[in-house]
Amino acid sequence: MVERIDILLPPASRCGYGVLPYFSRAFLAALQRCGVSCRLLGSEDGPTPNLVSQLLLDPPDCTLSFNGLLPDEAGDFFCERLQIPHVACLVDSPNKFLSMVQSKLNIVTSIDRDWAQFFLDLRHDTTLWMPHAVDKDYHGDPESERPYEVLFAGTCLDIDELRESWKTLFSPGLCAVLDSAAERTLADQNTSYLRAFNYALEERMRLHGDVDTQNLDLPDALDNLEFLIRGRDRLALLRALKDVQVHVFGTKSGSNGWEKYLQGASSNIIFHGRLSYPETLDMIKKSKVVINSCPSIRAGAHERIFAGFLGGAAVLTNDCSYIRTLFTADEELLLYRHGHYDAINQQLADLIANESRRREIVHRASQKVLAQHTWDHRAKALLAHLDKVLPAVLQQL
Image (cartoon, rainbow, N blue to C red):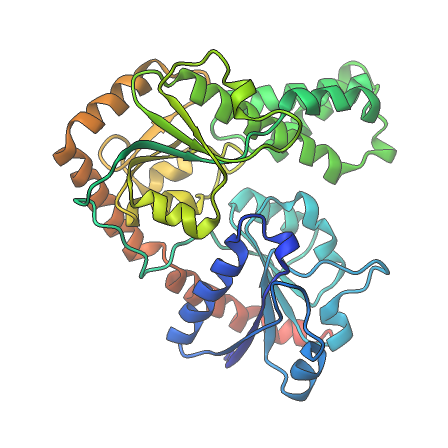
């Protein structure tokens, strides 16, 4: 049985808008409620000078960090150096984390079942599917004043600049593969971009054979594919929303931001600046509906869905078979499919006009979240997994 887990704070340079430190502290509290002794080590400014000595003088059963500890420039892992197993709780896609399989001391968790299977297919047998979650104590009163009709918080992904960069980065054959995979992913709400890429590559090789698979940088190709589908999905959705007031918070990923991409869109789109993660949680409490656009997640659920409900907002999110196993469409959340927006405007307008129905939806959904999708539930699942796999991991020492 696991008795001690030390959580390592990721440096701010890897945290974007402060989400990883927030998750770290919330998960630490959940583990403690499960009876596990925990320390929060390190600093958002980077590793502290005494971090190694703290761990060696008083070693835990394992360490844990959100999005894991990648190898250093020499290819060495921190867990190998200390000879202490490490749990890498990945909350982003697997593209940048494939190196984790190089050390058997890394125990990987992934928020999407298909992503977890990706690691299992690489024979990293200690991988766990562990979806996103929310702090059980986060709460917004659904009956409180909510001045924002619809909230979208997200970066504007500069897909035009991305596509232009492909001209020098990729062969025409690989560009065609990426475009085909993007179309397949966006058209089929149950196909992950990982599988879509494999399908598109196999088809291209069968028909043309013009992709250099021997020298293919797979993580880079998948990064570009995921960037494209996320950028296209959120842009198309926001352009389609015309009958409700949508408040867009976010910066830009390249040269062009929301003002450029939504130029000429309906006047109901109101632009704001960037929000930190804690600020986003506060803004959810002031919003009637929260949009979650994340087409790269097909067999999992983004934390924005769970936080939206506990924050007192209704949620509009991508349709997929997995999310339908968690919530009942129209009765507990609103779903959309890429390219099919005809009904969404009316559904949103009707929901915002009917406050009692909106509150009923939030109440039903939030009860399910509290029953199944808090960090306390994920802590229990992880501890059960560690009890199974940690003995075999320790044999690697």
